[in-house]
Image 1: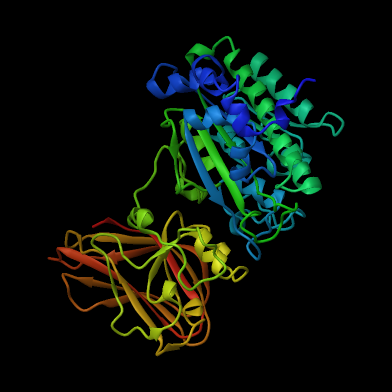
Image 2: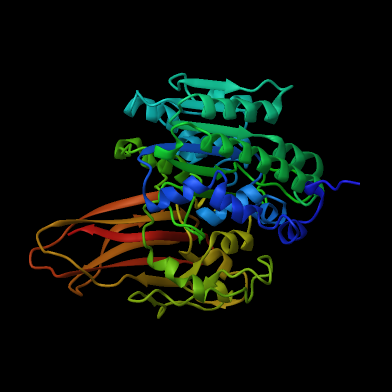
Length: 508
C-alpha cells in the first residue's frame, strides 16, 4: 500500500529516501534563483508575499513535512514573532491580515476583529496600493481564498484583486497565482491560502490533520515558487519571497484569545539579498509590508507612519545583547520551566540604580528587569502586557504589580540609566524609545536627562496610561556640553508597570 507523505513523521520524511529534497531544491529547484539573488546578478526586483491562514505555529511547521518551507528557511531568514491580544485586537484574521498588509498595528489600521468595524484603510492603505501610488507602472496582483482580504483590505487601486470561489478554495487560489506569475508580468504579488486555519478549527493545532494541512499548503507554495522559476525573464529578475501567517491556534483548536499559541506568527524571507540560514528575534508582522516596499525600491515616507521596518535594515539594540544571559523563572509559576526570559544584568555601559528599591517581592521583577514578550506576558495574561507590540526582542520592564505578588517591604523605586553618550553642545538631539505604560494609584514614570554629569532634569512624566507608544523627545543640548545621559525612573507600589525598548539618541 502506498503511504501518503503527509502521514509519515517529519523526521522520517527528512531522513528517508527523500531527505535530499530540500537541499536539492536549493540547488536546482525554484529556490536556486533566490540563492543567486543574494550573491548578485538579477536586476529587476519583484516580490511575492504568501500568507498561510492560521499557520502561525512555527513549532508545528517544523514538525510537519514541509520541504518547501524548509528550503526557504535554509535559503533565508526565519523569524518567529508574536501578536497583540484584546483590547488592542483579537487574534483573528481581519486584524492579522490587516497588520501584515498595511504595515501598522491595529491601534492604527483599526481592524480589531473580524467585523472590520473601525477599519481605516484610507489612512493606512495596503502595501500594493502604496506600490501603485509610488510607481504606477508596476503591476500588482492579489488573490485570496478568504474573500475579505481582496474585497476589503486591498483597495481598488491594485491592478488585479481576485477572491477565489469557495468551491475552488486553495486549489483555485494556487492555480490563479501560478498562472499569473508564469504567464503574466507581475511585480508585486500577494497570495493567501486558507486551509490550515480550517484544520486548526476542526481538529486543533495539536492534531495530525493540522500537520497534513501544513504539508498540503507547503506543496502549494512549491507550485507557486515553481511558477516563479518558469518565467521567461527569470534569469534577470531578483525575487524576494515572504511567507507569513495571521495568527496561530490552540492545540485543541481555535483562536481569537490571548494564549501564547494563538498569538504565534512568523516571517520566512528568502531572496532579495537577505542572508541564508539566519534566525531573527527582532522581527514583527508589520515588517512584511516595509520589506516588500524596500525591495521594490520604494522609499517609506515618514508621513505614512508605518510601524514596520525592512528586514534588510536591522537596527542594533542594547537590550538584545542580553539574550544569552536570560534565565528561567525563579518565583513565577505560570511561565514554564524551560522558558528563558529574564535577567537583572543591564547591557554594557548601562546601570540600574536600586538604592531606594524596596526589599523582598518576586525575584524576577525586583527593580528594572530585562525580559521577552513570551516570558512577561505568561506571568500574568490579559493585563495588557500583550499590547506591548512596538517592543522587539529583549526589552526593559519595571513591574510593580508582579513584584508585589510576594511579601515585600517599601515601595518600587528603580532607575535605569543609559551610557553617557557623546554630543555636541549647541545642537538638538532626539531621545527615542518605545514605551508601554499602564497607570494606577500614585505610581509615576519619569524620563530625566543630565548633561556632563549634572543634575538630572525631567523631560517626560507619565501619570496616565501610555499604551504601545513611540516617543521622540527633542532635546536642546546646552552650549559646551560633551555628554548626555538619560534616566528612566519608575516609582509605585502594588500598581502596574512600565516597559521600554529601542532606546537611542540621534542627532546632537
